[in-house]
Image (cartoon, rainbow, N blue to C red; front, side, top):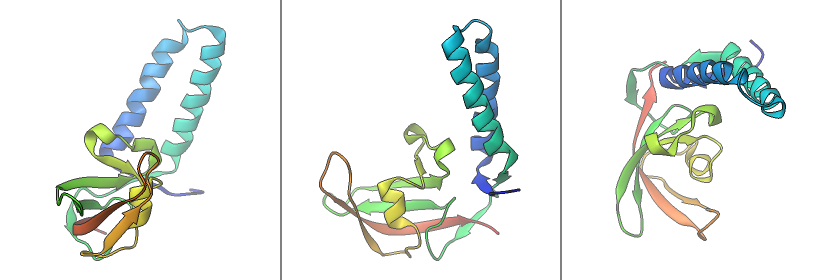
Length: 139
């Protein structure tokens, strides 16, 4: 493996499903779209070739890392919510799966419980969160 990519089981299934759907659509697509679909299939296949499945079992973590299930408390209104830090290929805000490259995830990575982080967001100046809990994949 050249660059190991850590994905969840759900992320791997999602990417395989996308390949299947694109493969079915290629035959009916216009020529320019077919090229884009083939490129996307190759891109996903390359990611899957280098992918390693993260363990499902989690344990209390010391710091936020890829695969962490993190509970945050927004510091202005004190609302709590949780998210999983994932590889960009499986990010999905509807399922609370946040890309490790997002501003919030980048601010959290390497930080311990009770750390207060500040993230610069495109539509807002800055937002602050306190890390309430970290659950990491068991190694």
